[in-house]
Picture 1: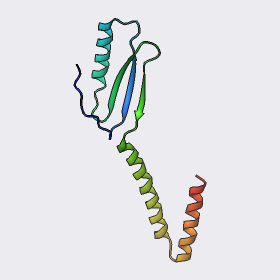
Picture 2 (picture 1 turned 120 degrees about the horizontal axis):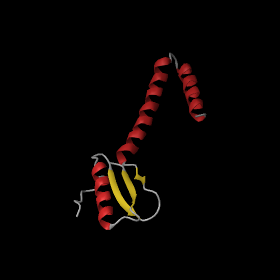
Picture 3 (picture 1 turned 180 degrees about the vertical axis):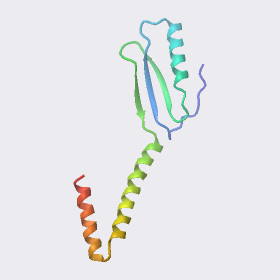
Picture 4 (picture 1 turned 90 degrees about the vertical axis):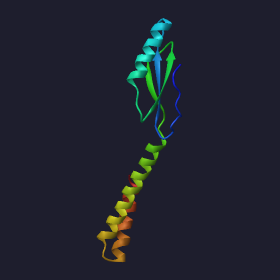
Length: 110
């Protein structure tokens, strides 16, 4: 029996559907074992699911919390950097209003 570890929801989860149709039980177990050994990563969780029909495939079933936060932080940092650039380019409040208007229009058209 395989060792069960605690599920880390910070990491993405993949499901690997392995077609074992037409294999003997022993050959299917050997195949799944070989595949599991070659997909031993610390930063992702992989579930192996034997199937009898269809193509073997890998699906991402959960992106992971770390990635989601990283993308949100990345866009927030970019937005803050743009606003800081606007502030640094302006010499007066009127210039600032014009720059902010242009920045908002640019974001609307993205």
